[in-house]
Length: 71
Length: 260
Image 1 (cartoon, each protein chain N blue to C red):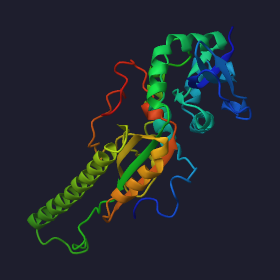
Image 2 (cartoon, rainbow over the protein chains, first blue to last red):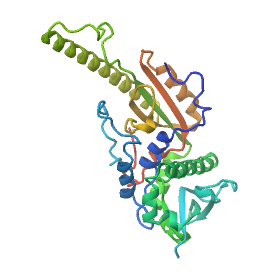
Image 3 (cartoon, each protein chain N blue to C red):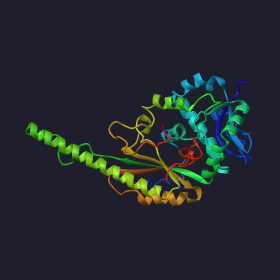
Image 4 (cartoon, helix red, strand yellow):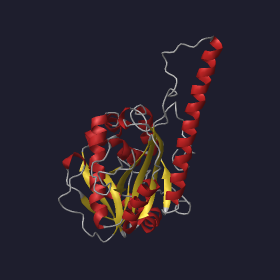
């Protein structure tokens, strides 16, 4: 199996939730201040949903250093 | 004033057109709120959903999270198709338009630094999956070990073979990542995906995002396909183009540069 060969990724519109959450929970600008929810709360959410969302599995530790801006 | 506004993204004024037909979270219409030189793309949300306590609860509800994330993404995508935007993190909620304007003013330098950097760019996701055989091929398990020592030797061999395969997958992932990073403006590593949501063939060993000029997208995707290792058990998946979520970093404009 190789890279998407039958469906061009450029044309593919269906977004996997897991890819979406990688970006929306770890990316995007974080505002502190006049908002109801802050980064710390979102990080809590990540912990609560760890079983469902991206995390490093016990069998395969990440070979990559954690991104520095991602606490 | 307790009306809550969900903020999706920030762009430069003047508004070049927030498509009137876009629906945001909860189906509410999306509109711009103008500050000094910047606009925020917002929609009204209900306090009973987005005050801190109910929001915390909602965020643990996968269906709610999924619907909100998809609405967020579709608004950001629609807006980023017509102008440069800085996407905000999921569930950024301000109190009233005055709260939105305060956010724009307080974050002015950070927002403009990111708009400068991200203008004309999109994000591509590249994931590499590896499948490693759990047992060595040539030793059927039915053949019982002849002794305790034989058993241990087999276990060791099996483990060494697995480790070799993982090391190989790791090396392929690193090489792919390094080469792609050389053709991108910036890169960022996400944690490898696992768990129920990430059901896929193989184990995700690379989960990377690359910041690429919009005009260079096709070339970048072609490059991924050319660089995809032609090895058994290796699979590469490309997602995108995304708005540059993984590169919207506003902690400090002077240190806000991500990647090399």
